[in-house]
Image (cartoon, rainbow, N blue to C red; front, side, top):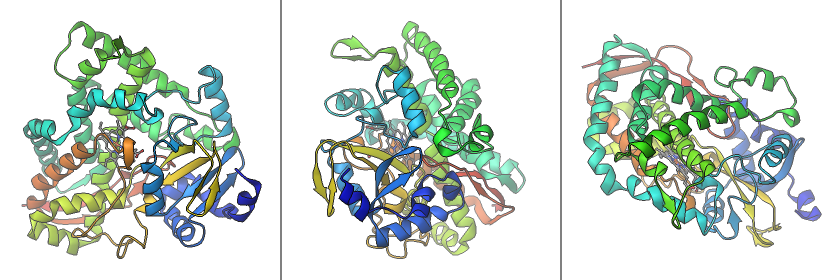
Length: 432
Ligand code: HEM
């Protein structure tokens, strides 16, 4: 990072701090930060004590451009998720110099990335997913039946949104149903590590200054132990599920290493439900606050696919990923140096005034909707068709019956800088 650029394009300290403050993602303050950055310093440098300096990419067009240039902006050269210097040092000590605790698709670049992605890609393509539609619809129907049985009041997150995509992805992976609560808890502990209600040691962590906060390795260890046993079972008794495919996969004639196989399970088992639950709950929250939008989509079910796109834009559950420049380059008027770290702010791109008309309004009939919540380029979300299909099916099953809906208490969002969404959504409703 050149000294001149650091001085010219430094982001004000309060805005830089906001980008790393979990509470700002929970109470919506982050959108004020993003608005300011898009207008005043759309590609600036954040300097925060205890974290290496990083460029902050907030405009829709720049996020797409960085994501598209996978040779110039790598995922794996440094941590692909924002990490403190203390945590980075610990990981490198543990992993023989590598900045990665895991080796998922997110941590890889060409040529390895594509080799590992094609292993499971066909599973997540629309033609294969069509064969799962009936099973997913049955799971959606039982979620709707549970809502009906709740007598007109529920916490939509706890009672519906968390369990539906969880059950779908665990069925796909071949994880027994009785283990789903454990998978849910571990996922919440990973993504909600900084949230006082969700994180395993979040209270102690929050009492420390940011530069002393550490990674909680115990959650990853628990995931490893669980999936190592699952993988052994799937090797001994393979079936047609994704868990068996991962356990028995070969790359260049060799089985996946333990770290690679465990990482594959973990990314599918975490990314595969939490994000979809968050988008679903965010949509129901927005519909409860905007009865006109609910009426619109109930009157015209052909709007359901557009409701799904708008939900994903509105929620943008994955807030950020990082990239590392592989060469010196002039990009969007800035001198980016080889090795510089860049933060892609998807939730900012999804409210960019240059792309979205009335970006701060939830509109079920938004058209066009160029939401970029699934990322772009070689790493574009592997599960995007599955996520959209799950949401479409749930709305097809629920909306015709949902004759009224309102908030019945204070909703709350989780506190997290990387992946967040609603953690509580009390609603009252009538079902026809
Ligand atoms: C609304 C739901 C979801 C959202 C918003 C979301 C978002 C994202 C984002 C932003 C990325 C990174 C893209 C990039 O770097 O360009 C990603 C990657 C990924 N997602 Fe999703 N995701 C969702 C659902 C799912 C589901 C259901 C799965 C199921 C397996 C999944 C699995 C993955 C995997 C494996 C990757 C890594 C792909 C790669 O690096 O090649 N996601 N997702």
